[in-house]
Length: 346
Ligand code: GTQ
Image (cartoon, rainbow, N blue to C red):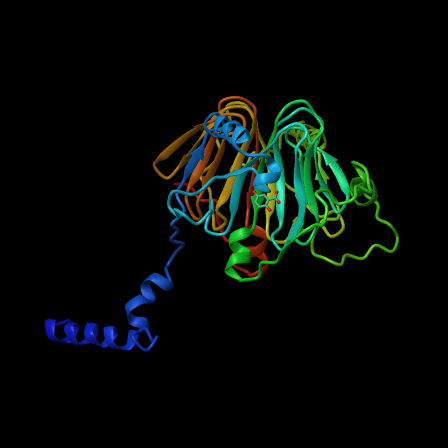
């Protein structure tokens, strides 16, 4: 293109932009890319870094003062936006003995993945208390009242996964505080599991919301399933053995915006190179290993968190028998027909 022509075009663009108009030819190649281009960067957060900072925050303010005493894991490629991936939020929350993080409800769906704590801490969802043990997954679906408490004698820490950026994208956020710090605790631990999660359902059960009626997925159960399946040695080259947390009433993802998974890699296993369009956040439950993402290598151990961005080739190497929890926006991409994976080698 000659100089005069490009000068004319650029002054044309400058002029129309003043009327809130933008020529597509200036931006088409950044809007519609031949493959995913993400600002999200492969990153790892060591528990040994985050934990002392949270304990320090524990001396600076109470859970009640903070409402939620959380350190957000912020992706360095998306600074200032409180996102771990383009569509997801992650934070690590601390509740000290005797504290209550007061009841509220919001449009955002959330889960708690327990990292540390002796029995005694709980999340109550619509009045059902779920006591926490390491590796448990507790849901607080969109629109449910939830408060957190700690009746034990040590700190409890967990990973919060929320769909905050998705709700923000749709400008669909509502939140309310309960009149009391604690919503009345009308149901005991395991109530929803007994009713809905044991292969039976109340005869007239009809889902009002596209979310699991079961509030807690205990690690003792999840682990048992993985190790039972391990006996038959049917390893997937890309995933080892990988399970998805589902809504037992319809077999779909436990929550509509957050896909959650748990996988087992035997000692010495090296997964085949894999990529998918759902950026994935991992939390290490058991074992040590490394994940190669593009040309970066991340060494990890229990309670570390790391993120694999969309469409980045990666593979895991298990130094010992490993259990990895992970979550992503896969259910959203799937219903929209956008999700893709590539099990190829590179
Ligand atoms: O525990 O309800 O990390 O509302 C961010 C927002 C936790 C919670 C977070 C929240 C919560």
